[in-house]
Image (cartoon, rainbow, N blue to C red; front, top):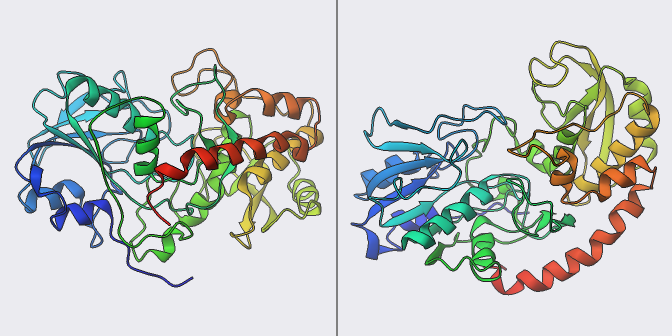
Length: 392
């Protein structure tokens, strides 16, 4: 595919696409990947262009992107250089309070999503939309590309009763939308009803991956450092719901995986026998420096994506769980609560969006049988979201 220079919503705003609030008091939901094409932070670019940014808000991992997963940030701090308040939306407060919104006339949202329901940034957006609706504040999404393309959708829709901060509404595991499109869907179909304005990307096509946009890749969170990690993440994130290391604490998170109880050669051999689309596995051993099995020698594998247009990360992850369950029936286990503010629901259930994956793996169902019901769900979702899509 030919690389084309895509203009983000931020770039379009800076070029004058919304002159009507050039003097408004702005809140900005931001993080380190909120940058211009020349890598200037969104808040600095806006202020340099004359916009009146009066408060910053940060999602999971913090405004500075320094926090690991599930590390709760402090409520707020004064930005040491800009001298404006910076509020955490991943702590005791996940929805902006009236006090936080007191001086704001327009709320800007400029986070780089990664196209996966589990990634909490879009749910930070949804809760902020609700808060702005209640406060009568205009909500503006500065859209960015879906880095793993906007064509491919995989996995189940979230089912009622399994809502959490890794999924508040029924969208697929790999949803194929941008943040702006999810905002449009949620505002109408999920009845948020805020004063919503989406500043679309310019020049982005649904079939484009991020490395064909001409935009610099800035890791959106500490454990998605590369396009490779983003590519495998829609499926490999499911390993968070198990006692398998998903590679946190290594230099290849979500690509390297395993556990002390696994034989690396046996695991890779069994996985390669499946001939999964676009994927191959290399036996490897590793010692995570933090999180699961920190400092312990793990037997595992590294996942290689040979053809990302054919690769199906959700199918791949379900197949990995099936194989590990068979190879280590007594050692493999599902992670227990708490997880992402949930103290009762099984982590794997809120990640998958129902209990069907856990039940299927434990009953030794074939991956194809576990995944089969998701096809109809995806077809119905495709019909639902067609009118909310912004890009061809």
